[in-house]
Amino acid sequence: MRLLSITLVLGILSIMAYCNTWASVPLFFQDSPQFRDGKFHNPVPMHRQSAGETARLFWTFMFDKPAGTAPTQAVPVRPLSQGDLLAAPDNTLFRLGHSTMLIKLAGEFYLTDPVFSERASPVQWAGPARFHAPPIGIDELPPIKAAILSHDHYDHLDHAAIMALAARTTHFLAPLGVGKRLVDWGVDPAKVRQLDWWQEADLDGVRFVATPAQHFSGRGLNDGNSTLWASWVILHDELRLFFSGDTGYFAGFREIGDRYGPFDVAMLETGAYDKQWPDVHMQPEETLQAFLDLKGRWLLPVHNGTFDLGLHRWQEPFDRIAGLAAQRGVALTTPEMGEPLDLGQPHAGNPWWRALK
Image 1 (cartoon, rainbow, N blue to C red):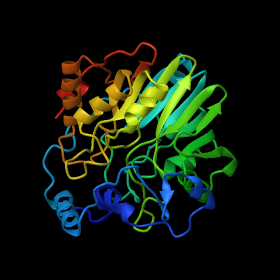
Image 2 (cartoon, rainbow, N blue to C red):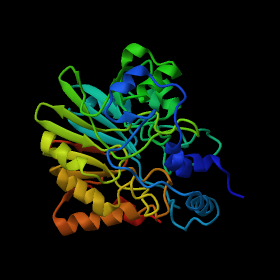
Image 3 (cartoon, one colour):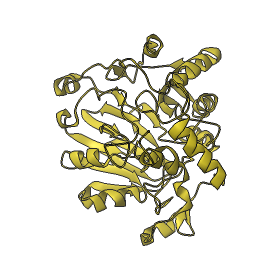
């Protein structure tokens, strides 16, 4: 019998958690336009699963999941050492897995949604397991200037990783409420900055803007939408980057593109989508449209290739977005895990997933 409901906490209850609220809410949340009635909201109301839909989805995840949602062969990973990272030129990105990117800017290192644990789950004895090890161990990383967090779901906010990074990371940039979680876990409050949508932080000349996303939050049954979710704009000199975190397609992409585009590289979620949860993850066609709205130059599809969080073949997000990009003449980059990517002059990479089952 498959391991039971703990997997569902991430795969289904994380989709449904926004039905509940946190018991105590910091007063400064009241100033956020996204906060009302004790929780955060998207600008447009989202579909809510009925009890019957939830039950059917539970059954599918537990007992009727289609074949091919996880690879049967090893995913290629290029091992990294601290020396490799220190020797890398500025404006280099290393994809470490899922939505975890290590970006070197102005001689400093920045991590998006650092997840290094074996499982994206509340516990490490059950839940979605990694397809591959990270290219570098968390203890081998150089000092991190900032960790950039998009929201509090387990495949984006890894408690063990945060605790391991706490002493070696100068700043943690997080949406409202996510920073409170870090402080509650023991991270030095002086290191934590919580931002609402459209608020900015400048770290020695590198600007970070918390921008809107269409998603939800929660790590359990009683804290749904008690914290905010966000995408991020990263600006340094002439370089413009976008990191989507998790999001459905929404009109906000066009506004972000108008305000901060065009983007040299847009890291956009492409994976764990399904017609049963259309509001919170994008189909590849929507990912492509979001990229066009953002006025992107190169598209880097993320949120794939590391965890089994959907009902599609694990290669499908890559195949679909590659086909769509080719049809529309969009420059697509698909680096292997650990492969350096020059953000100023990206390369297309290779379709490494096609050789695997």
